[in-house]
Length: 624
Image 1: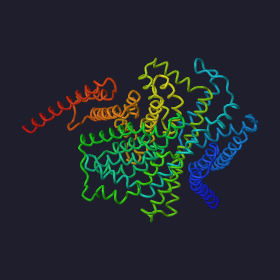
Image 2 (image 1 turned 180 degrees about the vertical axis):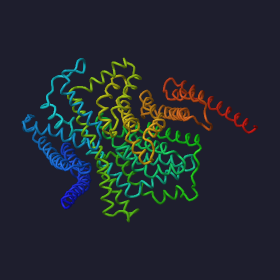
Image 3 (image 1 turned 90 degrees about the horizontal axis):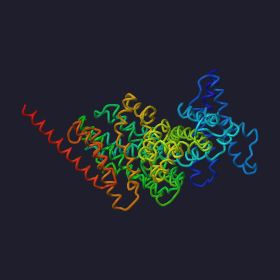
Image 4 (image 1 turned 30 degrees about the vertical axis):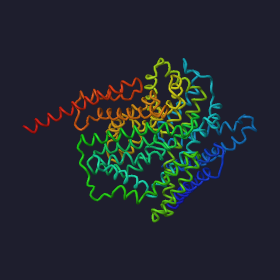
């Protein structure tokens, strides 16, 4: 019996080894020399990742092991069959045989069984609910009523359509996201992650709460490359969270800072967690335009997060850490500047017009070269294998979410549900764009729960964005809006993957960490509303208008941060905080301009009065 267990274990290890080596090799090949249709790319991608998930998350019982073996073989078979079926689709005139239909039905069941092990229950339940809607929608009264759909029609559509399981959602994971997950894993192997933390800390240690500032900016650097906020938390949080706790920050606050900073990486150019390339594909807007448009909102997000951290550190009087032994930023940069070259190369290649795949390919090669130059003793075959395995572990939940999102998107397109939900948002808002934006925000936060940003964006782009465009928002602003809240959904309860990961590292309460994260990100919730009404923040308009919009919005974000944190050189009164919030909102408005000046005047007056009152109180205390 023992020998059998060992044999089974060794088979599992062999499969994991094959996947950990084959997946990066296959995608590096397709990013450089190999050219394959999207259905081949996604089929091979899921065949490998699905096999890994089964081995990584096995059923524990003896019967379970038999089920796992059947699932593994069935998954590989349906991936191969899908490729063959697509290749012969034209020859068969689009007519499915009975066997094709049976395989299609089995594929939906197999995908649900495998993907649910990695994503949890929420997304599979949503996918099943959408399938049930397609089957039973003809019995639903009103505008949600559908025509008659049978399982024999639904399953082949989900199996072969570009909107289905092996369609655009999984293709994005295979074509773009995995390469950047691999890039991030190899960067970490070279020691770049520690360098980013060190240089961020060296540049911010003189600020109050320096370790928290380091968490903000190091997570920003790694987050833009990583395809998942939660994965970024696990990567950089292992350095930053203990450092924050060491200087006196509470565990829940330390976890919240890391969660909010890591989630923001999904909206930070140049990579934006690979969502920029997905948005380009779905909107037809060039990658360069999207990356440029995302720049100012990302700066506002991280700028206000940094200000909030600074205010809270002063308000709670966190002690300054001992920096006597700290190296200077110049020395750290001189010693580790090579770590920046892969990121710089990636940006340069993207700007030059190279594809995301080809750019990532060369950046990965340069990362390996840098690793051998800077950290040769760490670049062993064993450690390289561990990094490749880390990349597989990182892409597994994303790919699982993407293939399930394919079911949702397939049903949405098959039944026309997307148009119906957009119509509902338009009807309820009754022509009022602000109401539509609020409804879209709530929908985005709800549907984004438990999903990687890429999967959340794909669903929201179909369900929500058309309503905003129809009501007057620009196409770019509408898609940036839902992307923003899709990213923020990873920190909002009840299902907050980034917060859960951060709370685990911080050893703090999940709920307390979640509350702190929402408080820190409060200003961030305002930013998407700003750029929908103020397109200059998306780099649209004259240079003067863009600069004015950025400066006033940055001041506005700072004022709102003062209001929410209750500190600006001194603790602010309740009345002062209440007055500061609308003053900050006035600074966001592009038109009329006099509102900007009024907002500055109110904010300045409140802060001056608060400072005078505080000094009088201190004088009274000193006299007594």
